[in-house]
Image (cartoon, rainbow over all chains, first blue to last red; front, side, top):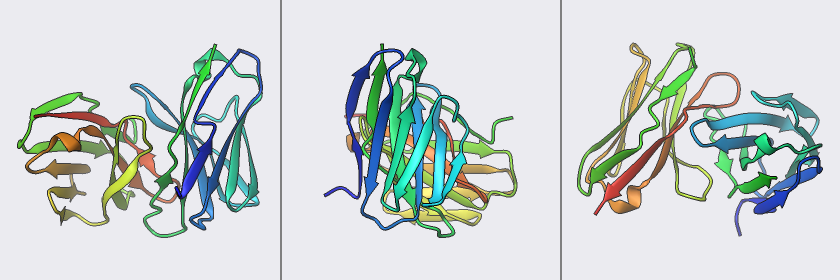
Length: 113
Length: 109
């Protein structure tokens, strides 16, 4: 089984709808991250969490919120989806080591019509 | 100036060629340097990391860091079609990794 799983893998929704993307990990890492990836823009950090009680905004947090339900679970919500949130979303985890190597999930492809 | 700059390509080479992928960075405080590989429709995966100036080899891959020039490189020897992917550099200071935008590489058989 994959160490980092994301659900759903694909989602098509309409403008204004609330969407939740979920991430689970079995690596036992404390740190979890949400990124979005767009062509030509690379990976951009949305939110990150260094433990269950810690939530930090990333580069592009506007329009998004997160919830860290447990060490192994980190959810990303779009309260009112808009078309420019159409992107590939990745969850990642890392342990608090010097290199902070990140392990990525398979991604969720979100389309907002 | 962006913290990490990476030429997005695309880069197309024949099988067997030596490939050079590069990133520049602006902050001399960066300490850890990584290369991730991302296949189409997959998440990025760590390929190599290093924390000092100089070279680090792993099979056909060599990571090179020049801290004085703030320049990092990934060399792929004897490139294979299976190396076709997007390669992202990533650099660490005291907060989450900073990623380059990635270079898309195609190795043509």
